[in-house]
Image (tube, rainbow, N blue to C red; front, side):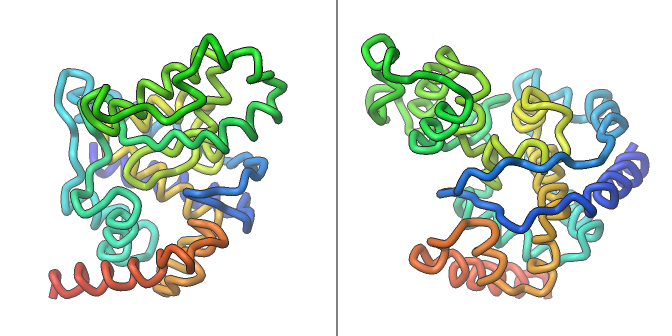
Amino acid sequence: MKKLLLISLLLSLIATDGNARRRVRHRPPEPAQAAPCAQDSARIDETLAEGDSVAGAAGEILRLTEEDYKEVAEMLGVEPAAIKAVVEIEAGPSHQGFCEPGVPLINFDFSMFTQFARRNGVNLSKYRKSHPLVFSAPSARKYGSRQKAQHARLRAARSIDERTAIEGTFWGMFQIGGFNWRKCGAKDIDDFVERMSRSERDQLELFARFLKSTKLDKQLKAKNWAAFARGYNGPSYARRGYHTRMARAYAKYSKSVK
């Protein structure tokens, strides 16, 4: 099964390479209309659906393995340590993409939600009284954890407008904006959410396709952390120290494999 998955993903990565756009933003992003990716993910999806990822729906969080990192890093032409460096900055040192089985790590961004609401013709003003949770950050204490509070807010936003809520949220261990679902090679926005919710391997593959479609794989391969962080995290990357933090994380993980 792994050979079929590898071949399918490699073909998918090659197909996306011609559809790149230069402006890419992650937390905090700048909304840019996502470009379609000319790729066919059906075979990968079928393989994953028939294989290990099914266990995620049965109450188990499917974590990334060292083999997963190595396989996808080889397909991208980068070092596993470089991918781990990105994970550490986006998901934290725990390197986890889920808070519960089937419940991915998310960051609901209200400013992005309002921008996409305007773009999608959703009048949010009429929901202020009926959906107060959307308009003010919920208490982690009330919900039991920050992630539970985030998901409660996302559910409330989805009840206003499903698409806008997904687009205004950052997903998984790589914190990819929902508005970038096309650049990740998803068939549609629902497919993006389904795969983000399935396994960390799925999240890694979506990240790989995203890098190929935006050509950020070249910056990651060169370990040009400033250029990568500028493209991945936006113009505020330097103020937030994303590039220096990634460089330090890479140094740590590259030493561990020597």
